[in-house]
Amino acid sequence: MTPLSPAGLEAIGQALFGQHWATDLALRLNVADRTIRRFVAGTRPIPDWLAPELRQLAKDRPAEIKTAIAKHLPAESR
Image 1 (cartoon, helix red, strand yellow):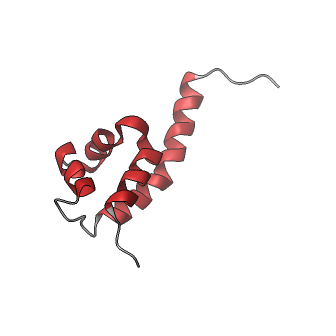
Image 2: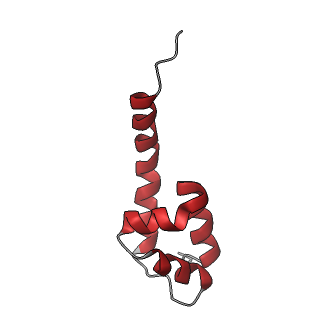
């Protein structure tokens, strides 16, 4: 398997969390947002544990979004 690149981390982070992805991802991973920025800048190696965490977040996000929509938007009339 190819290791996660800084560009890959940035692309996945943006897809998961949008514009402020680094801060939001850091909060979810319980790391400093500066750590995430260092991974992207290439000044700190991306650890092996990060890829599985990103995969799990990608699995969890659709359900979180669906729950938020169901809770905060009225049901569509049919």
